[in-house]
Image 1 (tube, rainbow, N blue to C red):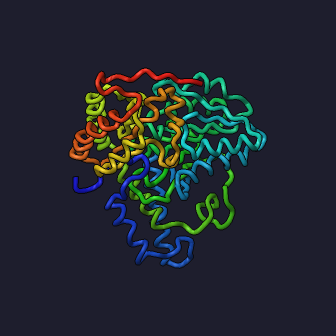
Image 2: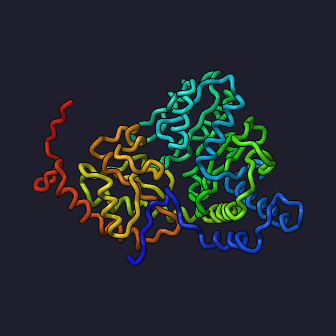
Image 3: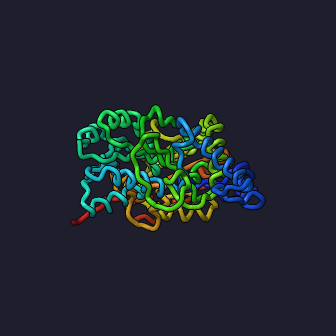
Length: 398
């Protein structure tokens, strides 16, 4: 291949050329402050409000008043959770799952140190939530339930409509980390009955550093920061107009291109079936059915995922071993551990995530170079007998 094959689109995606075209004028000619009284700023303010409507349409929100622009998905998650807890100060119980993104899990761990009682919903071998555990965990002291829409490592989709109904019945605020779902599957926040929904622009071809928090009208929440009147006082600070306009345009294109995700699904399935058919030491991590169309996570037993990634990189292929926000750790993914993926496969797990710009040629190229890489690593693995094509007996002492 003459260019990098980018199969790490759950970490970040390329900026859509149409998005870049929409953004550039606001870095050059249209640089007015949308909070200003003069026409130069007022014209820009109209473009900000258009972007708000474009995002509202992507999420199925009733009106653009419910859309707040932030600096990314992590900020949106923190705003949703901390803002809710600041209002419901008398409640000290919080619920999430064991497979959430670090933006939520690390915040929950800090809150536990501050005296909050946290319940973490487990998942089964396919990555599906234990809904009975969730139901039994809810009580009158629960301040918030924060559950992702789709897992960032496996792509598994969670039953957010069912959770939304449970929370509404118990009058418990419900926040969804929808970062991996936006632009991949249809979203209707009204049907879900969530109070708060976080997304990140760079997951659907907007620039990095832009996020959104949907706040259902009437939701009780306090801001994280205090200052000016921007974003109706909910997120003060001079607006990042180029980023906001780009996020709005990206949301419009994501909604328009949702039918094209079926092509992405077909390419994902082509890659997945090609891998599973070729190797005897590989397994699929996560449900095969209920997942976003762009993601597959496969575990190669008896070899290290980091080594696979390095060899793929030499071939011009960019993939990942899990969340980009957890990279640098030699520990197996917390998501795969929670799913009960065997240690031998968890260490060799690779996430491939596609976008609407991924081509069939790129998929076929990836399938073609993997055998050489995997065979080379198996030959030097102390756990694999190349002659018998089987795992060697291993004595593990405690």
